[in-house]
Image (tube, rainbow, N blue to C red; front, side):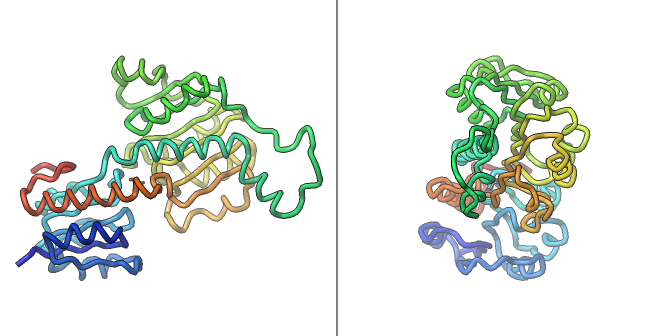
Length: 321
Ligand code: DGY
């Protein structure tokens, strides 16, 4: 008998075909969000699951799923999975590193350019029929070329963002818990600075750190105050890394000039205060969402699931035990 697995959200058909070669697959192709209770009951008789960042895997779920051996996230971020709880329950957890770096880096630049040049605000104005002609001082924005880009987190995605900055002839500074190797710094043309230096010097602050307790509200009221009033903040990493209420206040009061956001606290019910602001560009967590990349992410998660349940050695295991 084939092992039973659950695919919690809609995926591409060929991914299901691939999984069906190895498993008896139950899938949610109608893509109805599954709450914690339903997830636990659907997983009760399953050996594996392909999950997304909307599925929480924790002790209370794991105690109800005695047959579960692997949970494979279709995401590089895995703050939806309690890794310690998985390890205790001897459940392998995997993620999808690498395949989304370029696409997420590209989208970070989409947010940087749109925010700096006030694109959402200008388009809303045009669509509302308010444009009555060219004006010298209309929608004056921030120049990107030769500006200073401050990157929090020079990991894989931070490095992609830094590489793209070379074309704009920018000065790149970064801060991270660990300083990058001289080779990486050279390739990225990036200079290590303190958190305070980054905040006070950058024209654009962009965040590329994972979310966990140490990065909770990495950017809050105090940090926003240290930024230049002409600067912009970009977040395509995870909600919770930025204190959204403090950011809304900073955008209202002119503490900083603008923000470009793909992620929020409490997604999808984000703080409605953002909707009253003109100086913000908002996207619904789509930084990795190109056709090719979302397919690669789903395939990598599927390969992790197959490897986990056939060899016990998935390529992207987060919790060797
Ligand atoms: C990730 O991979 O962590 C992304 O946020 C998913 O879109």
